[in-house]
Amino acid sequence: MNYMTLKEASEKWGVTPRRVNYYCAGGRIPGAVKMAGVWLVPKDAEKPLDKRCKADKSMDGDNT
Image (cartoon, rainbow, N blue to C red):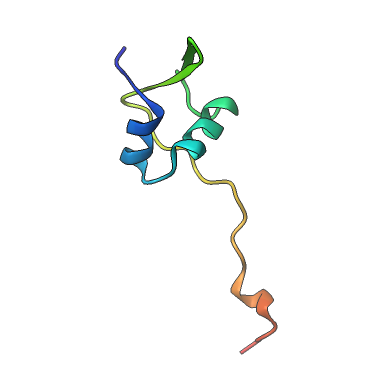
């Protein structure tokens, strides 16, 4: 299996290397492995969905 670094994955997915590290540490990237303290992500891995909450526009107090 071919792997890419956190930096390569972050550039491919348009996120920071820290976010990719978070995905790896949380087990959200199937096949990601940590070798010698470095996360390796499969080259064919899909970007996990972002589970962070997004603000609902109806919650801003303007009900129009």
